[in-house]
Amino acid sequence: MMIEQTDLTVEAGLQAEQDLLAAVCRGERDYGLLFWRPTDRALVMPRRMSQLEGFKAASIELADSGWPVLLRETGGEPVPQSSAVINIALIYAAPRSEGDRDRIEIAYKRLCDPLCEVLTGWGGIASLGEIEGAFCDGRYNVNLNGRKLVGTAQRWRQGQVGKRPVVLVHGALLLDNERESMVAAVNRFNERCGLEQRCLAQSHIALHEVVPEAPWLERLGRAYTDVIDDLLAKS
Image (cartoon, rainbow, N blue to C red; front, side, top):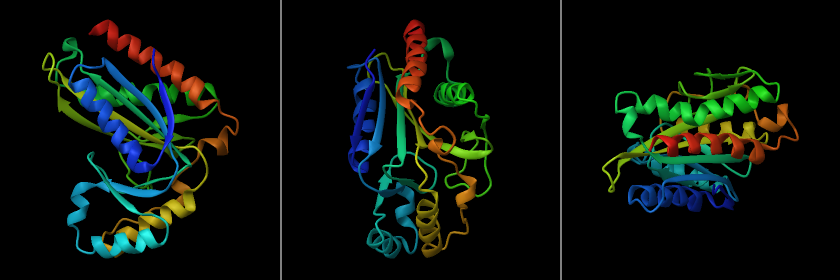
């Protein structure tokens, strides 16, 4: 099984995910699985936020402070990206046997369950759910010891081959502790754009704070290999 792991600029990483999604949609690949780590920094947010009053001025100010703003195709809220983050992108066509009713929840489970199993195996307390004070908070946060570790999102497209819908489900895992500067960047953007939300550094946790020598690529690679094998068996 092919697992891709690479270091990329944030812009290139977002594009690599979209390229894999397009390739699966065209039927050129059965799946995509990419682990990528940013080589630079950016505050990434949904394209709709570019319509906010104050967006342009906030973007200039954030860029001057080392957090240039980039827009993404998935929803949610502003998410900081830097070399402290590992991104996980899983792309696949929904098996016909599953139907459409629960496909969003199933996609999140395929991303989140392996993470929870690995974290539990390392002795952590893993959970899913919202965390007060977390940036880009959601029901499918992956939390470690009661604090947010991984933010998640997904995007669906109609496949061109077999007409099956294709999903890109994404997780951003905080590997190293850069919580203070990340939260400061998100809060500065929200303040400049008149958004009420304020985030807290203590609502987040980095994997290396709990498991300093975590062999994350080896363990997550094996876990997602099982996910892909199961998908291929259902296709």
